Length: 268
Image 1 (cartoon, rainbow, N blue to C red):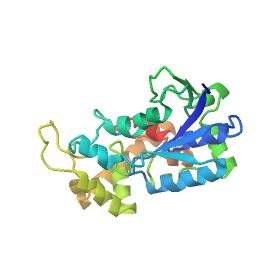
Image 2 (image 1 turned 90 degrees about the horizontal axis):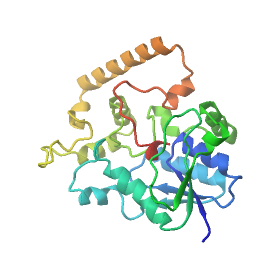
Image 3 (image 1 turned 90 degrees about the vertical axis):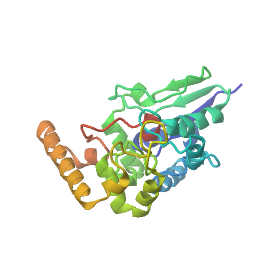
């Protein structure tokens, strides 16, 4: 049985750079994207741009079973950091279904300067490889690949979102929710509409942010407080780290102290 070579794109800078890096090295590479149906609109446009550069179609998975389908299956219980059913059902599961029992080499875009591993399957027919680590490509190398190709950084970074994924991702910082409200108020309204009062007997309210429903976050006084705390964090970080290039901030390298780590399968 022929071994398949598969690279899963997220719409983030690292998986994009890896696809560009591997384009001429693995001619039979398959490119896939696990579509939740609720991705950032810039992600879809970015994928089209990547597809044109690669000269190959990026296979979009989940065309039928998107977020709303699985939300019903889970009884309206919104995903959270301790219950990441969205990652399991909308990212990992479709990937494994696409692969089946075929022998596969899975290419993961973790850089040489990162001490982490991707969210990968434990199926024994999958071999995971990290070309950036093998080739010694660090952050600067990824940025060079994106710049030299003409693809550039993901466009959602321009308005302050730090990673790809759903517009209502629960890993967003509060300041990113504020930016979403400003940039795409209709998406913010849709995210708010998913929230429900009460806890359904499950121990917590159906809200994206623990302790703060979006109906509260959007109030002017709360937006002002969020902005103030964010600016104070930035001031502390600048004092501790010295001046940083703007490109690092735009690329999501500046993290808030209280920010959880997003799922790697969504943000790489």
